[in-house]
Image (cartoon, rainbow, N blue to C red; front, side):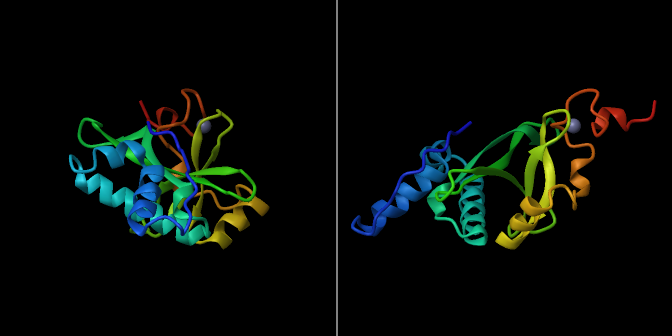
Length: 165
Ligand SMILES: [Zn+2]
């Protein structure tokens, strides 16, 4: 998992240095190995860029990492993507997953369930959506919350509790 290391960039640096610094900050592990998995690299770089624009934060304040709770592929061999946004003004962070219905232009905000797992709690496509969720938490929980693999065993929203035996 990549840790976010936002670096301030200034316009006094050459464009190539600023661009590389921005993408290294967004996905340092992915940047170093980007040529080995170009599809993942481009997906994460584009998604982080779109998320930064949607929320009005500098691109270097959005970090892409492997999602520790959601995997894909027949054997679950591919980690999902998770994005952490750092608000430089407040110091607060928010975690997002790509919204599978939004084709790279929408995200699922993660929030704590009663079981303490981070699960999808709101759809966000623009800064206004995040503001609405922060003002009125948990009023529009997306269906992806129910059965999310991050729920702890025994949580009423856990997939294990919804399977009929
Ligand atoms: Zn839960």
